[in-house]
Amino acid sequence: EADIYQTPRYLVIGTGKKITLECSQTMGHDKMYWYQQDPGMELHLIHYSYGVNSTEKGDLSSESTVSRIRTEHFPLTLESARPSHTSQYLCASSPSREGTKAFFGQGTRLTVV
Amino acid sequence: GENVEQHPSTLSVQEGDSAVIKCTYSDSASNYFPWYKQELGKGPQLIIDIRSNVGEKKDQRIAVTLNKTAKHFSLHITETQPEDSAVYFCAPFSGGGADGLTFGKGTHLIIQP
Image (cartoon, rainbow over all chains, first blue to last red; front, side, top):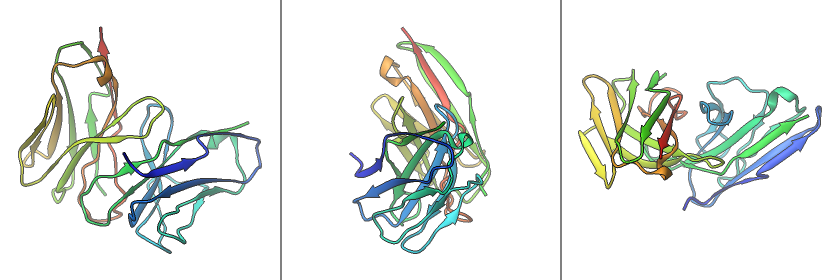
């Protein structure tokens, strides 16, 4: 099974709060990704990283930010949560070799009230 | 970037029948063609993949076929079972451009008892 973990699994938070979604992998993968997904719907890439100190924005514009200070961790932060941020957030990682399998975490279901 | 289209968006089949999902891509440099399965409440997981030097690959009840000339590849599931009910995503990979791992919009496969 994949060694990639996301916490928390579920989060309900009030509007205006700052939140950080955690993602950790123990496989030593250089590439990591964040996707936003409404239940059963399309996966929208919002951020990705090629390695430490590398972060790129994805296809879907997002008010969130990410950091990659360590290979294992790729946290996503929302400075001020809004109801429009309510969604599922999925983290993934893959080896740096091109054309290889991606491993996904279980996701964080975020609800902003 | 890669333009990915997946059809159909929803597929309902009787248990025991076969299911076929098609993925069309735009980048002729694509060289890796995976299929992911996402069950309810979980992250996507790779179920089968194929590389550009191979036309077909089979793993028990699932198979993937590739037509590089026409730029499409398909997922075939035979003798469908209730546990095959899920959302399936393709993610053709070319390794160029943003390298952000783009997924198709997904196919809801429903297995009718």
